[in-house]
Picture 1 (cartoon, rainbow, N blue to C red):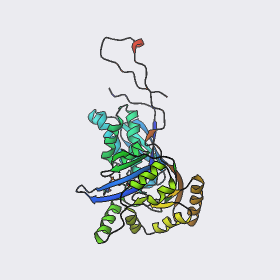
Picture 2 (tube, protein in one colour):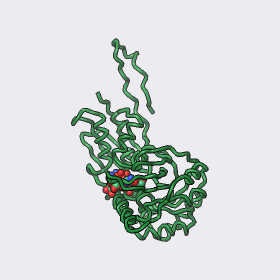
Picture 3 (cartoon, rainbow, N blue to C red):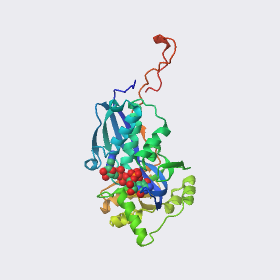
Picture 4 (cartoon, helix red, strand yellow):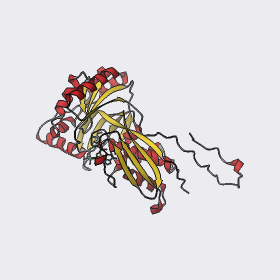
Length: 334
Ligand SMILES: C[C@](O)(CO)[C@H](O)COP(=O)(O)OP(=O)(O)OC[C@H]1O[C@@H](n2ccc(N)nc2=O)[C@H](O)[C@@H]1O
Ligand SMILES: Nc1ncnc2c1ncn2[C@@H]1O[C@H](COP(=O)(O)OP(=O)(O)OP(=O)(O)O)[C@@H](O)[C@H]1O
């Protein structure tokens, strides 16, 4: 029988920035072939799950009004996949899911993906499904291209449509300033715009990531800075020309490098250290080029429980009847 935990559980998942985003050919399935290097950042969303009779989503925090509450929310889709794994057909478990957004919506920071990844981790615990990391990664890839990385965190290469992850040797912590824009950008629209730009001309391509990998292994922000690159940047800037000023404000303020994060419109400024990041954030903020400025560090871990895992119910092995004294010791616990 399915054992469901009564108490609410909290999980957290990070935003990401693409240090390198090389966009290849458009595939027959509508996705582009990618080679990307992701880094998880210390800006996160939090998910609280509770056992309930039906799926119900509530949202508060950064951009909450723009987040759908129904089945188009990635969190809903994550809950349905997990309920399927739990079995029991239509009588499968359900949960209420409260999202606290710290990651701006449609910002190019994988906010929805973070919520989906945190939901997988939280429901695995709430419903005591004991799915392995690789089973969760497989479900994550079905939910979206960025979701496996939101689950794994750290620094990784993503290939395929970005969902197949390979480890990267990365040393040190990097200091970032993030400039949130006044609106969002739709990811499919930015990819479409890149296809259009490529059809009419030759927008810059960032090439291979070899030098960037060496800089990450050396752990040197100054070496890394000139190697950051994003093929989607030209498309994001075409759709939102104000981003040009935001990027310039970052480098004028003393950042080592300024890039559009993923499909944008968030701009990410790499800084030499924590003090420089504070100075850059104050200066960029004073220019009024963006809605809000935040500092963040990376890499950080992927989606994880914030509340302690709940004790597992004792397992009964087949065999002769046992007395209470024979029960297995409780695993996990606070
Ligand atoms: C821009 C990035 O954030 C960079 O990491 C990702 O490529 C986007 O990942 P995501 O938001 O998880 O995207 P998905 O939900 O998988 O796909 C949304 C849409 O983005 C476009 N898309 C996405 C990934 C990819 N490799 N090629 C694409 O062309 C497709 O139009 C797709 O229908
Ligand atoms: N949990 C969620 N949080 C935010 N948006 C969501 C969520 N679920 C679905 N969405 C929808 O997805 C769209 C993209 O939101 P999201 O914040 O994930 O964009 P993004 O950060 O640009 O994504 P990515 O960087 O992965 O391309 C939103 O406009 C919203 O309608």
